[in-house]
Length: 220
Image (cartoon, rainbow, N blue to C red; front, top):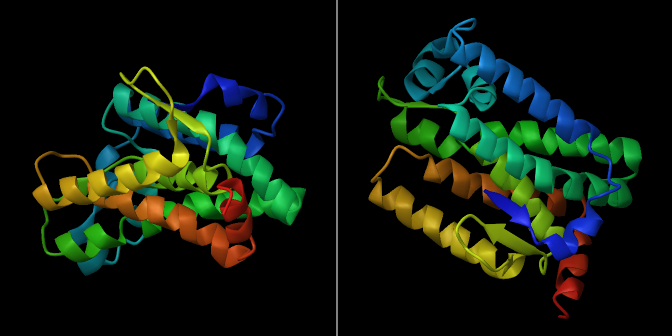
């Protein structure tokens, strides 16, 4: 589980969480319905072959609402719960409450699709390749929060001390790139990588001056 350093939790206490909570509730609800068999998960998963050859484009988004199990769901939603409000607050400050809320939702939803484009191109002829989970979008939110607060400490499961965001970010990207090349497990490292990159790019496209804020936070 990823979460901010407790010393920075005061940043989060009184933040707006509305959109974050709505996303969590919808995602958890759909995932649980799939876990219990009330929904057919096969109709929701990302399958590159079905998307590319049968034009089932809805799978580019629907897969972000379903998860492989309780651990997968809880990890993603807890990470979103901790870091989503940070981004909501800064988007509200940068773009205004209404526009910031809309852009937050656009960032999250579009990150689901953008993060899987690489896998779509790579596996478009592989009928057996499937993917589920909101990890790409959650990575985008995490990296957007780092863009706004690069010195924010991040606790990583099993690591007893917080890692500053500006250190965590390149290490995370390097890890995702390496694991994606090795292809040793069933985790969508490519989606994690591109989701994270998108989380940095999207806010800067919306407001390039955010880069100045980032550099100022680092004392540059």
